[in-house]
Length: 438
Ligand code: CA
Image (cartoon, rainbow, N blue to C red; front, side, top):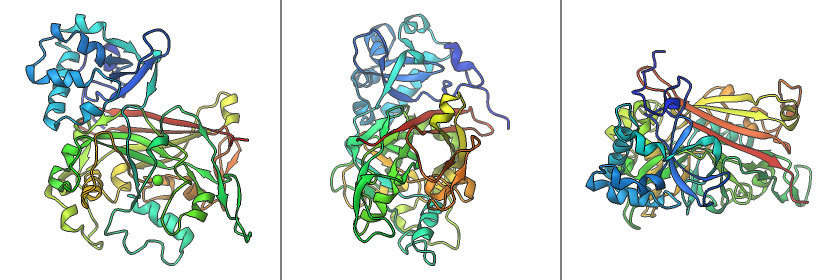
């Protein structure tokens, strides 16, 4: 595969062949220095193995020939959350990206001033990039929906609405946490298959879900839907997301109103948001099979057909406590691609969400749903890999898993890599299961 050469940066680590943060990426995040500093959360942009601190950039802006139109953009980035920046018009965000790219480019005249704005990524603890006020989780992979449906309804796995309406539920924003945060096994009400009455206790069927998270940029007014033609300007960017799920609690509680406590105890996200602009080279045509219903007009557009999906390679890995103690690296459990997994595009999810007049706000988070691809090796949950727990998987360590055990670490990674484009990555979404509260 002939990857394109990066245009390069004066930040040397951004030019290394294996970096996921070349100058073509420039993802946004928030961090706190591990030691020293004033202890406050600061916004930054990843470049190589460094972070360009945006508060410091704001502080030296008088020395930088900032275009007048960008003054308020820099003000929006001096705070502790990205929400103000996310809510700016798409044109202002794109102009800032160009400005950043020139500042960090090989011919930058600001190199000396900016050297004091760099912080090594090794010296920070990443934080949530924005305040997530609302979180919705969709169910956008038809392969996941079919596989899970088969376990409950072997003869009729896919419900009749699936191919017409993007299915989702309102999740809980209060427990969205950044990668690295431990995840406590939830306790709750379950009913065992052979029991007449339910019981309460730690979940025995704790699972992960390999998802992507869509961050909303500009919001819409309540009562004002977002047409497909405008969806992109409301689409800030993507992260990786693990929708931790307690399958035993879910099975008992989900009818008739959908997931509740089986999902709301934790949702992990990767710390860097890769912007829509950075994903442009990885756009691919969105295709709906001829034998399937074509989307209703409000969920269709020429831009969708031309390039409404993205080529993003996803990986899910597991490291057990025993593996960690022996110094063994996480092992790959599955691999899939957003373009093959997502039956509904990011733009369709945004448009559908607002189609009834529901207001979306800057920083709102939409989970895509488990990104399982068409083949068994592309299953994005352990529920699918172990066929509902009936066929435990054997790890290279010899350990078996039907669901997650305490001490298990789940890692999601993703890169975009294609001929004619510079490779970029998302980093990792990591979480380790800790025992239920005793
Ligand atoms: Ca989910």
